[in-house]
Image (cartoon, rainbow, N blue to C red):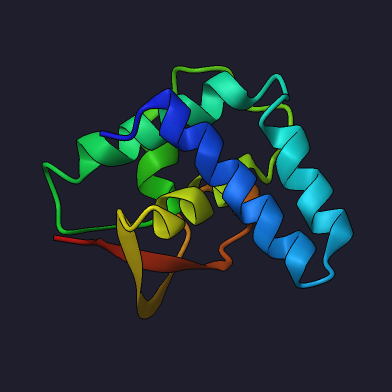
Length: 119
């Protein structure tokens, strides 16, 4: 399980990599996420992904949204994408190369990435 300190370091690492690649706006966005009101929500989403890893071999954002349906949604709708990027950079998940239609009505049936858990 990723600790809060590891989670915060991961956000800083992502910001540093983006800054090194001259993507200043993206780097600033990741730094702000570490200080945002969605910080608690994103930590819970990471914990949810860790929980899902014990019950199934693959996941998509829909799975996490369904497990967290009783929680208040984050103020930034892109927070789920950040959660998946953090988990990927931490070596928890990797892309399968597959996509599937979302089950969420808010996403209008778009294709979402399928991830697998790393051993």
